[in-house]
Amino acid sequence: MSASDATGGAGELPAHQHEVDATGLNCPLPILRAKKALAQMGSGDVLRVLTTDPNAVRDFQAFSRQTGNALLAQQSDDGRTAHFLRRR
Image 1 (spheres, rainbow, N blue to C red):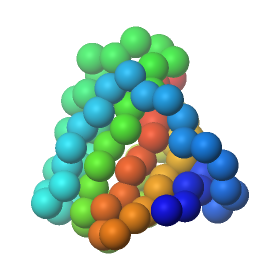
Image 2: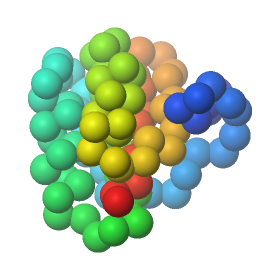
Image 3: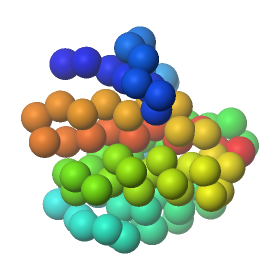
Image 4: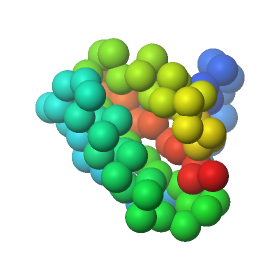
């Protein structure tokens, strides 16, 4: 299992306070669930979103750029990807 940040480097995964399980859901549902969770979180909190949609990697990168919430890391393993977002 390898961890990578949004730019492709290796490292430890960030600690998270909140989690959304969006496995089995296709675009745009993982993004919508993440958006709803982020709206209920405090500034600086970290959300982990679990997805199985292969397009989610690019979707979360674009979502981060558009919303200003930092995409700290994305980790893919065995068909699942974990996306770590820090609430702005």
